[in-house]
Image (cartoon, rainbow, N blue to C red):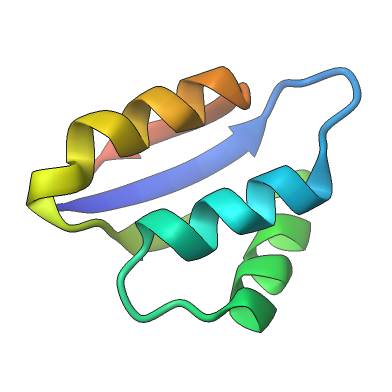
Length: 74
C-alpha cells in the first residue's frame, strides 16, 4: 500500500518518534532516510512511502497517534 504523509498537526512534534515510526512501517527506508522524511513532513511537504499490506492497519494507527495527516494512494 502506498501512503502520502501530508503533514504533522502536533503542537510539539517528536521528531525522533516520527522518524522511528517511518523507519519501522515503510518498506526500504533506513533510519537516515526516515529522518530526512520527518524534516520534509514538518516543513509542510508531502512524502510518499510504501507500507506492507499485512502491517497497514497498525501503521495507520501509529500515524494517527503521532498526529500525522496521510492519504492512501493505493
